Length: 196
Image: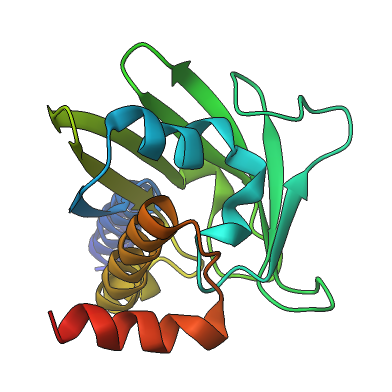
């Protein structure tokens, strides 16, 4: 009887360990895209080349800059900090990798998520700008992430998708008008877009 109990306990712990290991690497995936009435080069300039200036085209980022010892333009290895509040206590640090200006694409590896519940090791985004025609492009943004704790990932998916869709709209506005986007003016920008 004791041997049977030990075996059942061992089997239970083994199955539980396998489930925990499998769950540790599970990530969530979100993809959003937007057609922008601007040439590929104009959109690429904002998202790829002006990598450290994302605060100009993102309504949730209050300030951004290149990190020390980083190139001060978008390129392989460029690193930025994105501040989500004025005192800089909420932030994300990111690095451009797999930078391909000929294909208008790059990957962003999150290197430090600050106090946000993201697992930086398993969280990254990809940007791609595709040509639709001479004056129109398509911006595609994918985000693969893992939260801490992991179960929050699926709960946050809808919120991330909404925020990323808002970001696409903000990029569109900034590229086509030159007006910087922030939390205050984004509400009107969104209303104007919805009334079209």
